[in-house]
Length: 464
Image (spheres, helix red, strand yellow):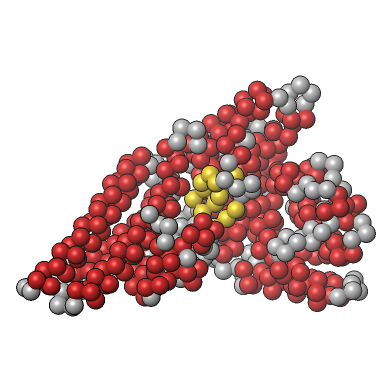
């Protein structure tokens, strides 16, 4: 072998060692996580991450081995530099998931995340448990992974979305290619650690995941727009087509809000009141992603009433949506359309003869539970019913004279995390491979190998 070939071989070996180190570190981490996951709570999530990270690492190793050692030294070094950037980005993607799973090792966060895992599973698995009995052929895939984030409110990152963090730092690689994360995520606000009753918001976030997972985004939007267009025309509103467009733009949030009420009852309304209180002048102002705050709350209350849930109006905690939109023409129009929107949302889902209430096994009696009672028999609906009861217990505690103090709320918070976290259904949390081709090792390898040097460098910048 020529001196140049020997130089190339040594350069290639450095990268092979780096890839070997990455794979060894990843394998050791995954082994430890699986060992700690005695109940196989995150089994399918680990499998999905392993297929993505280790699969891509194996592919990069094979590609390195195939490099031509006879290339001029500069050209070979350029090939290796690109591989170095690919390895760097791969390590970064692993770190993204590692940091979220490793939160379960933090003594302060672990109790809340144990409870959150149960509530997520309850809100997610209910759909896929009942689907076969309703004649629907769907696969569940890994449940969304909850983690604590420095956010004011919860948020969802389906597999088909790129998280803000990765989009911000990942450059064009993520913006244009990595649109199929191996697992879905649920961002929990850090306030949930001290106030675990906010786990009720998981209903809204899981609703987003379910809608995307079942391919209901476009169909539901069309269904909603058609219903609003007919109703707005009958009501002789100023611009029926524009009203339909508005509600179509809000359709994903509408689906998630309705899902949250069906799965968590009036507790979902009461929780949202705390995050949708604004100065009166702002309560009737329509927004880009959501209806006006007053309209949104009215939508959830009317959903609860249509479902036959008691205490729907009381869950508004004294707010009057009609009064709050008075004088705001668009919001007044939207409020008149709310009953149509609720009816369309609770009708049969697009492309099926099954409604959301059937899919979730809705039973109004489930929400008569009073904290700290445990549902009997305890089934997959139990954790979300308990979370709803915990939210109602918080509202009662805060409203009681001399009882809404820190000590009473701290005691309630500790009990909520303990009881919900302990009431785990004894089953492996596995799932079949979901539809929609989530990113796996081969897919990630193709993306990394297909990037031109400038974009690859931008994607890996800041990854160290």
